[in-house]
Amino acid sequence: MTSAAKEYMVLTAVGADRPGLVERISGLIHEAGANLEDSRMAILGGEFALILLFSGGTESVLKVEERSAAVAAELDLGITLRRTRRRTETSEFLPYSLRVSGVDRPGIVAHVSALLAGRGVNVAGLESRLAYAPLSGTPMFHLNAKLQVPSQLALATLRADIAHLCEEENLDFILESDAHG
Image 1 (cartoon, rainbow, N blue to C red):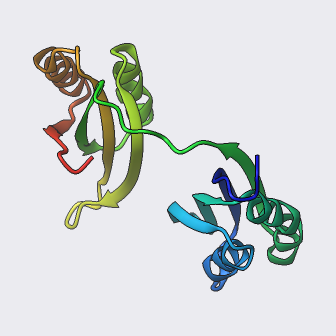
Image 2: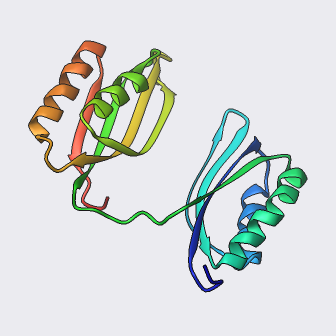
């Protein structure tokens, strides 16, 4: 591959949260001549977690690889790199969003994701969080997922299966088309 060919790499980083982490990691990519294309970042507990996709020519990607160990040591982060390819959109899937909420208990994500996987639905993104009900202080669980539903799957069947699971688990849900993907 020539240095003009575009390569893609996923970078993940985890470590104690503090100011400046995003600046330093994005700076590493920029200084190498690569481009940050997509990212997700969050603070979970006291830990900072990041996953991102960057691209660049062979030389730029190699510079990020070479310099990442020093940045990891400098910031006391666990950084991993993995080569990948840019995902191409396909019409074999329909984009949907799923929201599930209810009183928190163990296993909600496991049950919902098992149902989806069993029907061939790909989870393209998932966020979950706990919030506490204002008056009672009851821990409430909230899940938001971006789904890729196989175009051949009957949506009425998927909706009925999710409704059945949520009824058994005493959860509310909303499944709707996500035209923005």
